[in-house]
Length: 71
Image 1 (tube, rainbow, N blue to C red):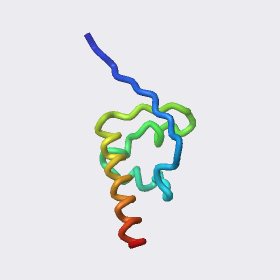
Image 2: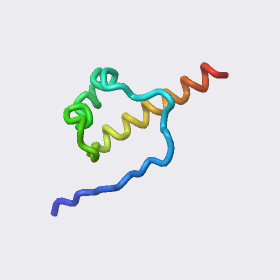
Image 3: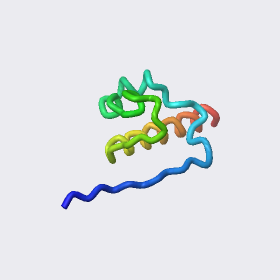
Image 4: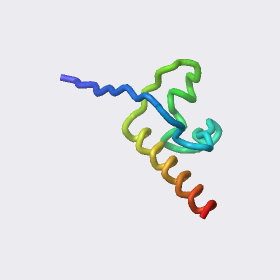
């Protein structure tokens, strides 16, 4: 039996002060095929666990970079 996991995510605050730009995401070997890049108009997007992990790593890296610059 094929089980599909699904979770609804509602953003209540900005994750980053600096956006994740499509031009940069297209350079990433994991994120270059994101559905948000291929079809930018829908309101719902699916991410693989690997894509979601990579996004978190980029966000954490950006946060650390901002902390380091402002320190």
